[in-house]
Image 1 (tube, each protein chain N blue to C red):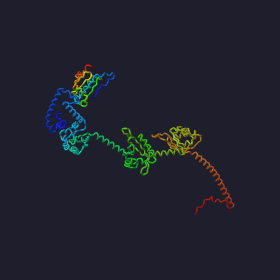
Image 2: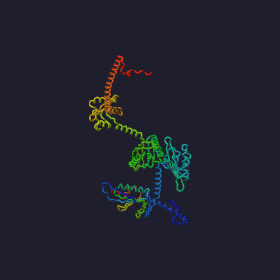
Image 3: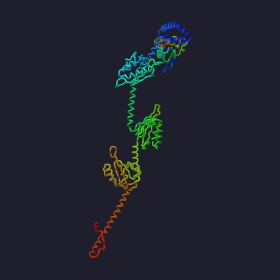
Image 4: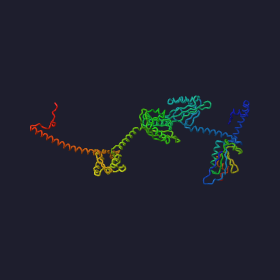
Length: 107
Length: 511
């Protein structure tokens, strides 16, 4: 599992990490790779310093998905803020992803 | 995915017994495959083609068919990209020599080569191409074909050859290798042509520079050498060694210690000491004598320089040894000459163009009672010449500087510190600069005071003797005259002459 934490910005007090995201992927399959690239970009652009993103490869760490009801890959899960929300697919439609995660309105 | 591996399926622990299972499995397999395909299609529909895989609650993941195909293509594309990025021209051939696959470099190489080129596409038989190569490359092509055949037949583990192609003025060099494509038995070979023209040029230029070095080393009279820092091995010594040391280079290579054994016994200690110092700093300079096999002795000057490895350790010593015997002898003769000047009882004196003293020897100082520092740089005439003579001597000095031969020899008095006179007989010459300009004079003087005195005493004595002689001779002549007169008177008186004066008469010649 790789955790991506945005480095604190100089000159500003670090803000509370508001968004805790997990992305479940299937190795280097094409949509999985796209999903990783897309969510990293979206987070950096919209939630700088305010998110924690874990990428979980189901081939390497299937145990991390137990009880999480991961049925398809890639799946993005928003654990915080609650309630939990899910987006499936390669996350290439930025508007839809931001809307589903309820991110766009805050920035 | 569509066809599971039958043997594995049949050998499953919980599966039916092989013989019975084979019949049962066919029906079951058909049913399962049908389900699998339908399941796959339904999953694609449900996920709208947006996902790669599905997972069960245990986290077991099943890659969907489309993702599988994409993944397979992308893996193949990566391998192809690697192969295509290689500078080598690579072809895969089967056991018959038919080209199965080629990389981009192979495809792109458009130069006219019989052995690999744009025409040699997939599907052609590479061995036949080599066999049918034109006369320009026939020999190499045959060797290549033979080499590939030996690899394909399993006789050789690999085969490689370097060959030239391209134009004669700008030849290209290739390294061709054939390696078997094998698991248990050979099922083809990878044929690779790599352009090694640049390496060839580098090697050639290295060979050139080595040959230039050898020409220089062979023709120069100094000895170059390169040895291990610990002295264990002589790596190179130039031919001049044989001439100077009078020993063969082979003898030095086979016995590096003979370098030290040739050193004169008296110089071995200083030699060892310098080498020890050199071991620390790497750099050393030492002069020593060697004894040649014929017993003759040569003076050698050696300069050593460190050759360091990447870690800065001195691993080798490079050096130059020069035969300085003649230089040494010249220095020795100069030293003896100056010893002579310093020790003989002759005045040695050098003056600059204004008659200021630039050099004098100890003898002049002993003779006159001056200290060297009292007279150096002072006007010779003012310090040493009696005041009455100064004008005359200045003219003589000017004449000498002007190069008049008559001024080369003269005698004159000089004054000691206490005012005594010494008479010196001088031999003078002029000193010239490198450009021929007169810059001063050099003189050798002999103190002839004592001899002159002796001469004068002798002269006086001689004069007295002369006067005495003249007196005594005059008296004798008067006596003879008187005797003659007495004899004459006696003869006239008829008497016998009393004085025998016959000795005055000329003697009659003996008959």
